Length: 288
Ligand code: SF4
Image 1 (cartoon, rainbow, N blue to C red):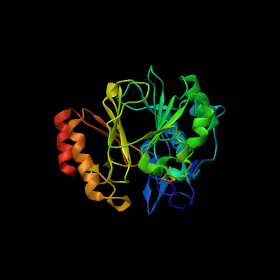
Image 2: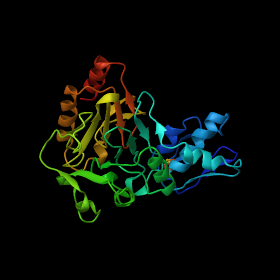
Image 3: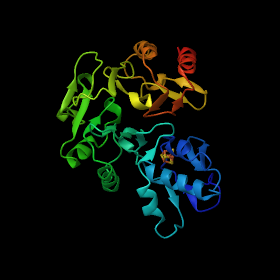
Image 4: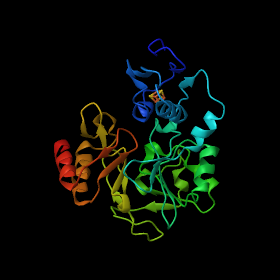
């Protein structure tokens, strides 16, 4: 794209405007027109590392770099999954999938069995990294939009079971093969009985959306239910992408007030981090 700033990194015209590179490497990428562009070439090792991580995470392989240092790509691949700031056990997997429109997937490391929350694109190198961190016991799918390569991930880890709500199951996406199907309105624990995870019914974006509360890190993983808007600088729901009921989605957001969380970690949109419960309440109130 001619909008790119001159230099080694550039974005091509296949960008689908998913926002991933912009939040992963904001010093380098920004929105120009209806796509991303490199607005400033990386100026430091840290900025270059973030730009390379964004390059690997781009769902459409639209980011390129003209020259690489020896061993650089491998080192960046090995840096995934990336820690989520403020959380001890929650990581961002990177390697977003085009079929999920670049949705962010998360990896949670826990003694009872590690968890993927939604799935990145199938990437053997990432699978190897997750194996080194103890493998994947559960794949939790928040809803039908972000299921991507779930079957490949589940097949790779022999003990892995996928979890999804009954209202999100369909044959076309192969989610009728999920091993654990949630019925009703919960809340549910994981089948391993760990009290650290609570699955919270949050219908509205679709009929069977479920969010996941990871209590030790006070992190609420919301799929497409709730996110931070960078543009509006407040919490938001994506009304233009609501496939079921906006009213129900807002009611599900209101019901989150009874939960103890300080992070909102969405599939799409930006993360939110609250200073304390009062801050969370203020932000929820501003949306509602
Ligand atoms: S990550 Fe890729 S598809 Fe998404 S906005 Fe950036 S360049 Fe475009």
